[in-house]
Length: 157
Length: 94
Image (tube, rainbow over all chains, first blue to last red; front, top):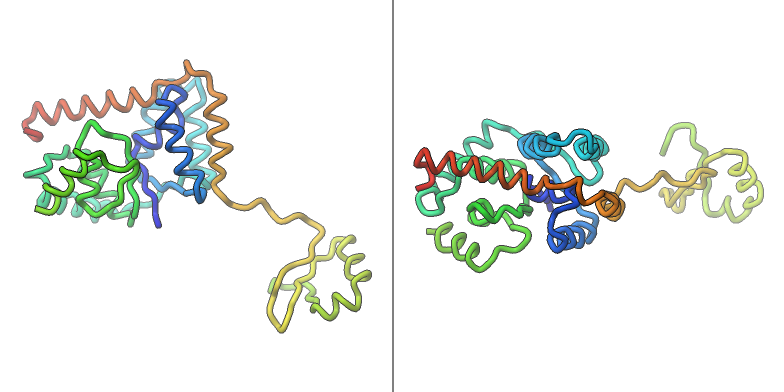
């Protein structure tokens, strides 16, 4: 079982201002079975980009150390031509109804290409989570009723 | 089996417990075998730390961080909101 994390999940592991409830939820989920999170270079750079806004705090360095250690977080090589073909396929199947952003298409397609079983994302401002479910990934935290509706009604139309 | 490592059977261990343990005390490592199969190792060194994720240690690190050294979630949200606004402006999300 492979757990692939969106940047919105990874960044919560490094932010002391992240909502306590979300961090606690994440802690319980990850500590159970000591899960390993995989991420793409796209997510790595996206997270690094925000952590490097304050390099003097050392958070970016900690993130990079964790990646180098490779125990909790692992960057996985992605076959990018295949990921973009997958993104196009998702667009053809879901764009007319789900209207995902281009970035979301690429993020979800990347997770599919990486062989993810689970997709961890806290990005509820976009259709990313519904798109991931429609693409056949298990989404964590669980989809809301509205998100489930989008994924079902629109994903399998 | 690792090259150069001595093997010891359960029977050997029963018959020569003292001498085998003395050798271990002096740095020797033995491969313990039963019915021709490896069942474990006798070694003076503790096993290497398990390569498990250890999220507990990570969340303890997070708890120790001063609250004012945060805001990364908001920065990412803002970044994605800007990206989405650009796509909406271009008509992609309408």
